[in-house]
Length: 322
Image (cartoon, rainbow, N blue to C red; front, side):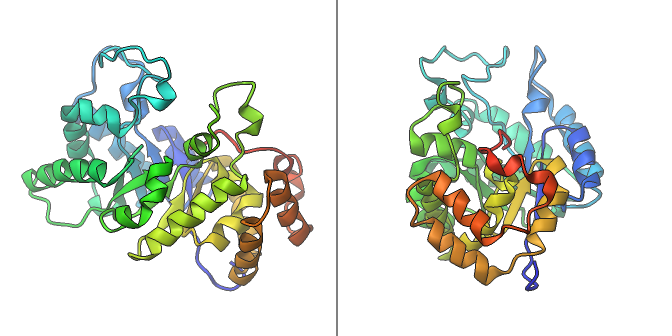
């Protein structure tokens, strides 16, 4: 940033190719490694060795840059044939993320082992999706520590959580006492806060992460994390929005993980910002009533700083990344 503040910009990746392209676009690592690609489009579950090979290839493609690997985030909305699961009336509110892991703990154990065998291990953090409360985190951490001990690993490996359900926001201070870091998934958080299914075409345009209610949730999450000195990243679509960058920085977010193709322009804009101006705009954004008012506020403050190629982007809603 212009005042010397450091804000890493990472890439969201879902394949080895994504990782290589993210590095080529200037990503400083990956703030979200989606592991679903290892499990989808196959008739049997991947072995530990198969998982390790894919994760290691992604790490190699990032050339030593840090990776935040999310454990399997799958459920009724993304069924896989070798994981029997009853049909759900509303899978968006159903068995997803860590809820699925709790029903199939052997899969989580195997995935932990595969991730822990990556080299260098110091390059890696692990995060859990759809954590609702400390009980979810404690259950997974117990398995994580068992597998870590079984592999004879003494090094610290950060275990963090996605913040994407309102209960996790409400309990952010309690969760921060036990999680090593937070990563805010703004896509799911937005649909749950606004009670709108982002997959519903009739509502998609209204599922807007610039909504002040969502921004207040982010502010509350950061406040809870700060009580315990935990870093807070954003890896949902809002992190890819150039207009959102000063707000997120002003709210105290410590890193962004974005769509790889937008990283150069996002970093270019961030370099023009200073922390004091970002804090002032963020505070004002929390007092707005609508997402449009928030966008107008940012445009008014930085009318000339956005690259011309982003003219179309800044007029729209949040991307589907994350």
